Image 1 (cartoon, rainbow, N blue to C red):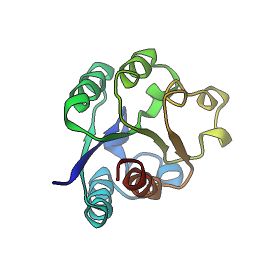
Image 2 (cartoon, one colour):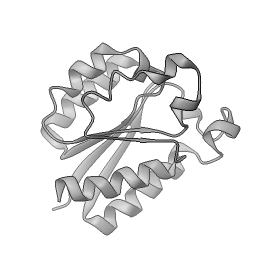
Image 3 (cartoon, rainbow, N blue to C red):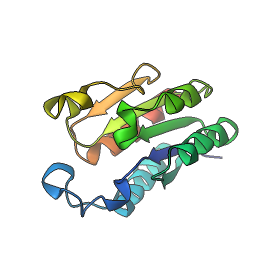
Length: 145
């Protein structure tokens, strides 16, 4: 049976492909889900990609992943820079956590340079566009394999 990787996306990522395509590209979150499923299949992994604009929903999904998932990939969007709650929830998860950002947050506004997720993450992928999700899935294949 394939191991499940939960892929969580925070606020505004539902608008991927529409919002600031010069920064985030033209691919949609559905495109990302298909890409992750394809990469996962090749590695013997299943993926469950979810998005919410609500911090508490993301916390609940992290708690759920404790019982269902081998690993978590998270792009918390703006909550990356503000959410101690997500950091605390991720600390309850025993498997690997990978943090993904589509844009290079270190070339953007100063407030985006700090991440509450990174201290818990086993790796951070920044600035590779949506390809960062595929890279994260490949890394998960190594970490949970």
